[in-house]
Amino acid sequence: MQLWSEFIDTVIFFELCLWLDTNVKGDIDMAFLNENEWIRLNEIAYNISFIYTVEEMQHEILNRWLPFLISYDSAIFARISTAENGSYQFQAPAAFHLPQQAVDVWMQESLNSDAFRWALYTCKGGAFRESMASSDEQVNSSGIYQNFYLPNHLAYSVGLSISFREEPVGLLKLYRQADKPPFSERDMFVLEQLHKHFAYRLVYEAKKGDTRYFYAKGYHEKLCSQYGLTSREGEMLDLAVHGLSNEDIAQKMNISIHTVKKHFHSIYTKMNVRNRIQMIQSLPVSTNKIDFDAL
Image (tube, rainbow, N blue to C red; front, side):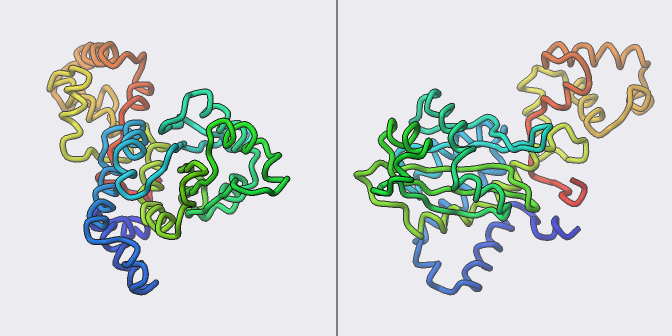
């Protein structure tokens, strides 16, 4: 239970994390944020874990929550997955004030950028800064500068390399234009406080479909409402997620196998899936209670 003891409950863990950071690094860190900003930071940490789907979380963090604490002109938040050949690739990026074409260029050029390779292959995670407001010929001739920074009028960035157990799971990049000041130590401090919360949420998303998790409060009701499931169908979905076979479900609910199959056919139709594997894999993630030691 080593990792679970670190996690505890999301909000409690966050408050503990802030306490540890303050006491280890000293009172100077407290000066970065005022009381209202600490409250905002706590709200962001809560929403990282409890916004219903990870896609919605990425969008809401960039477009609604993070601007309360850090000003930026553009941003990208992408998950990182591992391809069959062992290489890393971006997955489902969310963007703020960037067209899709710019996001596509960012994904291609970032994989070849020195900053990305450093952030990715150190595998420790954490905040870092970049500046393209330079006369350095090597910087100005780089693909990421020529094809992404320059066309989008960007000059500064701060990033958060998100990792879990030395495995990269995400990358968050915030950008400012040349007429704005560079990102500060305070901005990096804010992102550092959110690192573990992002890491837990993203690694849990990567484990979606694994039956070793539990529903958060209200999760069952949201599923039934989202897919129009009856209470009986919702109950059967719960049992399937927890690994029970059709025979187990029939015995537990005191119904026939035929009735079980009939109900699951209705569930598959409502959820637009073909089988039980697709059904489980399509479920949104809930992160209220997670046994991370089992992952």
